[in-house]
Length: 171
Image (tube, rainbow, N blue to C red; front, side):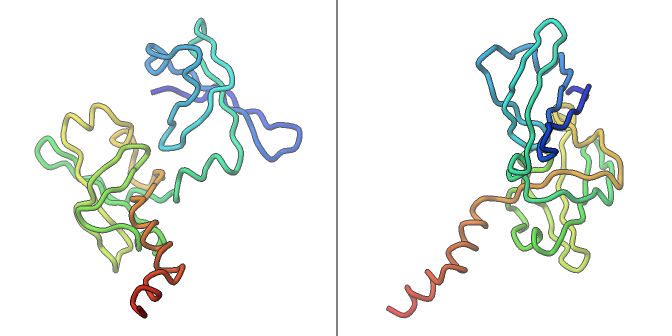
């Protein structure tokens, strides 16, 4: 985990650089390891400073294409040594979320437990071990998380919207 040290926009105002101080991440980082995932967004390291334990990444609108959306945590409930988290999302993203399916939340691939269509929410469970290894438990109710839905749902949507299924049925 790290913290953002500096943000700087380029001259066009369309992209910017972000400098992140991260001693833990950079313990195993070597020059040439040019990609780092930050909350589910794969970033290219443009500069690396091993003495200051910082790296710089360039961000553009396309950078955020790895993330399908950002939505907020609506509840966090402890049950024994586990943590139940419920996230409210948009109907467009919820269409791709199914119980027992997969979703990435802030870069962590998780199994969806339940989907609550009327509330436009879904939930998942973090066991104690996972809670110690990811950033999600550090968030508070009302904070946003990055969401990336299961790629299989995207493939199905593309096939359905392309007319592929209708062409097979008409044979």
